[in-house]
Length: 151
Image (cartoon, rainbow, N blue to C red):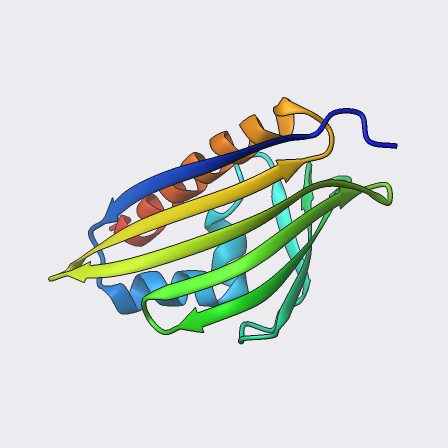
């Protein structure tokens, strides 16, 4: 039984001083994504990755000692190097916590890349999961910037 359904559309923008090809590769390659995609002190492990239209990623994330959250990413549309649309379903202990439709847009401006992310999320466990998406994506985009701009 669902306790509390909440939903929101979250939008983010991040400018990165890196060429579009480097930004695209940092997303497309799961070993790179696992580095910048989770907050400090947490971990993400991809058990399977198939970055193509119709492909699916399976991952686990959370505190490194438990990795208690499980995710399924289904790729709906990929247009290299400008667009990625995918769903992301997060579960824990066989309970669906949230489902989201994410649209990543990448635009080159010389050696700088602008990312626009739209996250249309539905939480089945209340507003805290929405805030988790809001804070998690904001932090992930900052970490992606730092990952690519490091000397």
